[in-house]
Image 1: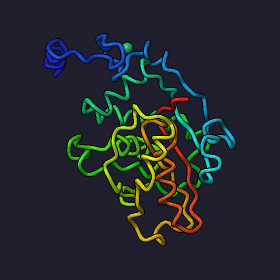
Image 2 (image 1 turned 90 degrees about the vertical axis):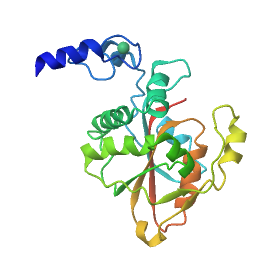
Image 3 (image 1 turned 135 degrees about the vertical axis):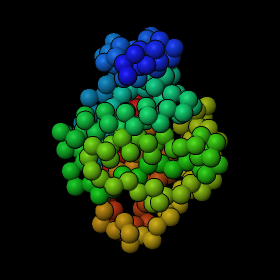
Length: 229
Ligand SMILES: [Zn+2]
């Protein structure tokens, strides 16, 4: 067994997705050195934190948190690129687990009824083969034992990439982007956590909240892997 493992490692060495160096047997996807240098936000989802303030005046947000800060040239950008463009579902799952490990002790998931990953447009979903936010949610769910609800929201149209747009353009671009796809009664009085890979202006999550606001007495929290502060 181990001889084959050794041979496999020799032929196909596992590399750190951030720095590209060969991983040690005890390392998984990201080497210890890169892992220790990832810029953590330290946001536990405490009431009134900086990320929550981003949504004030848009919708009532229960809790908000992200694990890392994002910058275009930074280490976290490489992780996100792996999750989105290089087919690394396993990376999404692992990062979801890290989010859960960080936030579970802080009580972030207390009283939460379901996790709602931001949906992709069916066309994009077909091209990518999976939804990175759903796989983040799966990684979280595996640790917190909260169901994932992928049927709550549907993307109404395939909007263009947000990356090169201004904050105002993103806002307009995201209007009516999602529709509620379940009967509102199904989510009544529930506390849901909307999950996405990265938060920038909050336009996409705001659009999810707009669609969810049809539901009576729903409480909405926001959780992303990274945040462009
Ligand atoms: Zn590394």
